[in-house]
Image 1 (tube, rainbow over the protein chains, first blue to last red):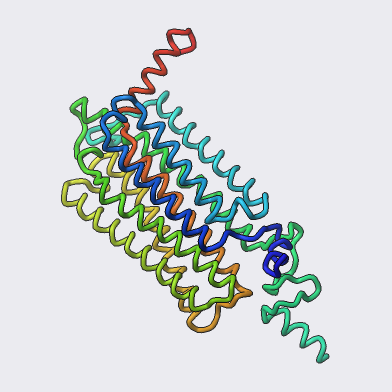
Image 2: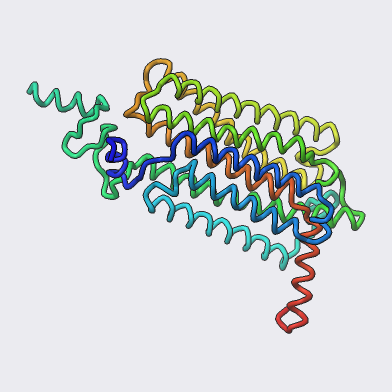
Length: 116
Length: 243
């Protein structure tokens, strides 16, 4: 184990990926972004209803790759992972609750969509 | 006395040696064994997640409502599908993704003690951040020319609030990176202080992941198709007696 790895282990961490791996990840992220944009312009994706699930899967893939490798959640202490997962669950709950609330209690919007 | 002074100098000088259990950055040990500053940054990012979650929820609700009102003859345009420029925003998304790469290369450089590499990659990250902000300013100006302002309709209000707050986060990130770059040029960022760069990097990558979500939910997702899927799901639930 190198000195850096020993120091990192003291902090509950493991060695981070190499620079080559970071570049490979950037290439993968770029390809995923290109696919996202490309499928947006394919009519069949719209007609078949496959666009929305495909976009969700691709963007979740990008999201997890960035937090896992660039933010080192895959390698760092599990405490950071738990903190972030808790926050993600919380924010998804907020999104769900707000959407559900405003579907039940519709606001009477005036002209332009503002409450008069 | 001389021994005490030497101990203090080593502890505050950020040396490699561990004094009385202090880690290599000169900070006392914590009960978790993790650096408190890093925990604080993750706690902040967790709270920021909730903040952006609320803004995204409001955008999703108001965007649909703006389109419904417009179709009912009560709303005022322009609407998202008339104004959002996907190819232009794709380039912005690419720029921000590349800034995440340069940020992580800056961290890798300082972890190896390569201060020159740190400066180059930090400068590149700040530059890419500034390009993104310039692009966002141009986009906002174009929207204003096409008749969409903060108070035009609820789509405009929720769009500018969400993307504006994201832009404010990017601005803070660019200032932070420039400060680190200036500190590094003055010799203030060394290998044993790589955690300062890592914490700035966490913030920067968070700004990037928020944009990943915004790019998909604001720009790419066709809301009329979501509405169709929702209505079909509700109809199916009603048919089986669950609706």
